[in-house]
Image (tube, rainbow, N blue to C red):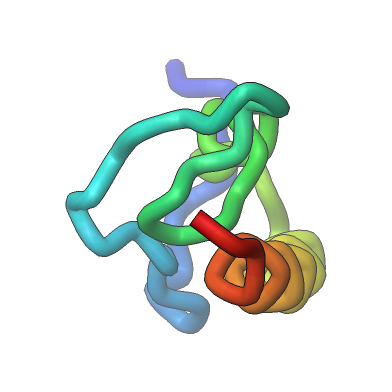
Length: 67
């Protein structure tokens, strides 16, 4: 028996298949921290929504950094 909650499909993953971590272990493709990527399967919809919001903000900051 699985200990993971049943996937609801209500909150899609922000993954864009551009997986590469920066020095702080944030994905440059989706903006999620590696810990959030690992935990995605076990998150509730509320946790996923919070994760997506954090990732979007991080992605904006990553994109606004000078190269």
